[in-house]
Each structure stands twice: as structure tokens, then as C-alpha cells.
Length: 376
Image (cartoon, rainbow, N blue to C red; front, side, top):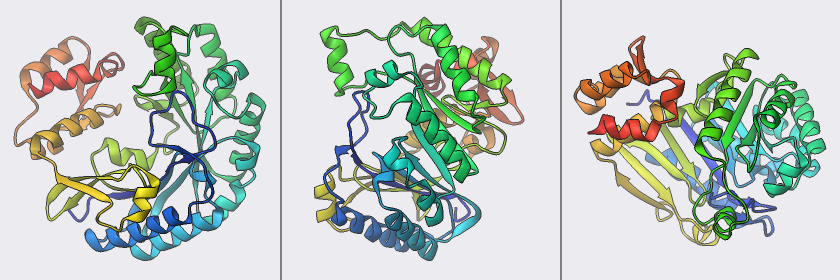
């Protein structure tokens, strides 16, 4: 298992504004929190001693808003990872950032620190939609941030949210045409979902607004796949589209069930320790996190074979290429169940191609249901 690719995720939990749709482990920014930053450095050192050392395939700064870190802090983390793990030659070192002027002004410094892939949280090019989503940038700032990022980074991406209340195909087409006009090599398209505990859940319960019906959401999804494909962006994963060679290398570690370390409040890990697949989760609150020392920050448990199979199916079937049947057999000790497999193929929901079992575009919309059928 020492050849298993390894990635590292840094969760910086602070945001200048808490978006009403977000259910991530985030907190309003209150100062620089040097104690939490030092805790991240401690965790990198601890994990480097805990696992079989090998170069990182990727290093990803997420959140929250990791671009609230200073370029000097980012450089310090990258330098420590290079010292403790090393990087493969084509390693992806990515960061999420917001398109506000304040953050966009730091992009060159982040590139100088070692970031080579930037993902912008655009969400929409419509000011009314941005206001509804609680974003603290406008459409003009969004366009300007994309242009600036593409002048600095060769590898860029941005997110859009669709299926907002009353969104029409005409409006969504206009958003997509604007997005594609930048010729960005990677775009993530996320359907608006009402997550438990969010401000949006409370608003929907009050009757302030209602989510789009499922059939309208499906129409917008299919439209996006078609329009983006014609522009050269392949939907290689349910929510992600890219030009060849620009797929997210870090996220593919998740989807392919490879090893990844997660540090920072609320981060998750999946790592192989002494031939056992382990799951780890960290303390949620930044203050509590910083007060502990590793390994007390981590709650770790061995995954059962059934847990591993479920994750392998759920994650692998998100990809257009599907899951490797040989890897499945090695993990499960048997072939993919023939009866549900063949029925899914007959119904046009799945296919077998080049020793991979993959869902069709229609099948990926029913992912959770299909996984349950394959687990029976």
C-alpha cells in the first residue's frame, strides 16, 4: 500500500460572512488565530511521523475561506509539507478563494508562495442571485477576479450554484454562457440544496421561498452538461467539468478512495495504517482544536469492509469513468453483484467500459439509490 497516492487537506474554518446555504464547519473571522495556525503545523509534523512517508500528490487549502491566511502562512505550510513529505513532480497545490477585491489583491503573493491551482467561489454572475446567496461580492468583482486569476495561474477553476428559486432554463443558459466566455479550464456546478441547520432551511420552513421541483433541477443539470460539453468541458464527475488534463487531482483522491489526510477543525481523513483503512475526524471548534495536541485532536477508527465498499461505490460512481472492477473485487473479495449490475445496464443507467463499471448521465442522478441496490 505504500504506492497509494496521498493528499493533504488544510481546513481553515473562518469566513468574513457566513453564507445561508453553507453547512460546512465554519466560523466568523475573529482575528488571525495564531494558535490554530500553529496547531496545523503541529499536525503536519505528527502525520508525517504516523504514516508511511511518501510524496504528496496534492495539497489543498479549503474552508471556510483559506485565502484569509496570509501568503507568508501559506508559504510556511507548503515549505513544511515539502520537508516532511515532499511532492511528486506534478503535484497540485490548490487554494479556494473568494472574488472580493481584498482577496483578489493577494493572488500573486499566493502564487509566489507556491499555490499553482486557484478555485474561485463565484456562485453567480447575477447580482440578485448573489444577494440571495448571501455573497459579499458582486458580478463585476466576480468577472474581474476570474480575469486576474487567469493572468496569474495556468490552472484555475470557479464554482457556480444553480437551481435557485424560480431559476429558468433561459437564465441558467445565460449564466453558463457568461462562465464559458472566460475559457476557464475547470468549472464546478453545484445544485442548491437545503441543508439541515442552515439559515436556508429555516427560511424554507417559514415559507420564505421554495426549492425548485426535482424535474426542473434535472433539466438544468442536463442543460449544463450539454452546453459545457460543446465548449470542450467534459463532465468527468457529477458536479465537475474540465478540459482534458485539468481535472481536480486532489478531489480525485476522494473519488478514487485513495489516501488523504485532513487537518484543521472538522477535517476528515482516510489513510492506510499497517494495512488497515482508517477514518479520522478532528475536533470541530477552532478554540478546542488549538488547545489539544495531536493525536488528541483526532478521533480515529478502523473502517469495516462494508464501510469501505460503500464508500468505494458512492465515491467511484460519481466519476464518469466509474469504478475499477478489479479494485472492487480486491476490496470486496467478489465481483460486483451480477443481478443489480445487469439490470442497471439493461435500464440504461449503467455501462461497463474498459473494465470499469460506470453510471450513465441518467444513472448518476440516482446515485444513492443505485448504491443501495448494489449493496444488497
